[in-house]
Amino acid sequence: MWRRFAFAVLLLAATVARGQSVEITVSVHDEQGRAVEDAVVVAVPADGNLRPPPRVRENVIDQVNKQFLPHVQAVLVGTAVSFPNNDSVRHHVYSFSPAKRFELPLYAGVPAQPIVFDKPGIVVLGCNIHDWMLGYIYVSESPYFAKTDKDGKALLPDLPPRRYLIRVWHPQLKAAEESTQKEVDTSKARRSDVEWKLALKPEARVRRAPTGEPTGHY
Image 1 (cartoon, helix red, strand yellow):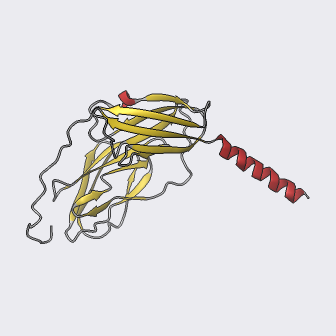
Image 2 (cartoon, rainbow, N blue to C red):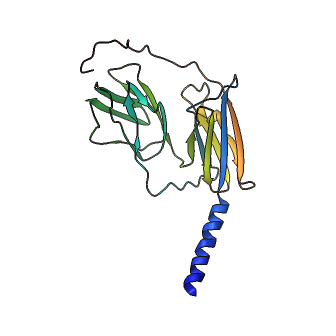
Image 3 (cartoon, rainbow, N blue to C red):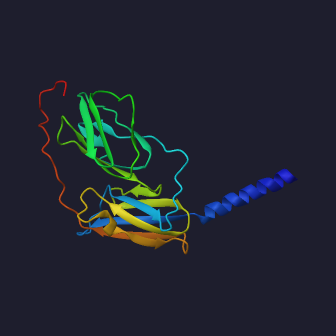
């Protein structure tokens, strides 16, 4: 009998816990009303009470067709990121960003050790051989983050009900990230919809080498 009672209590607790979670649906557009892809949305509890997961998953940024894939990646602070090179040429990956300075000298295949991103901030990636290769890692101090899809949509699920300060970042954002901040109180409803209209700079593009360039080590 006591085992059935204990099971019922656990089941009830799990149900209550699920019932307490909330979700925020985010929509991001530019000033012309076009959907903004690859915008990073971060929710930080207004009381500053952050509870990161006990284990942080390793992440991957690939190199395919002389591009970083994905172009923008969001990770939690403390995440180890691997940079496999799946091209037939070697790459020299680096960043001079204050949030993480590192260098992976000219290599093919998979580097022996991943890079741990141990400080929140924006990390701009480059390749010392191929100037047009550009990528971004957003290192979040909060475990509550998501990235918009091609429709400009993102979902922040399973949030504890409370007040959040939510902000948006994008590589082409004209204003400071802090200027996008909005406060959302999820203690009054299990679902919230939040929209942003961002002013974006034109995308900076470095001319890519011709497709028919001579093949070699680089």
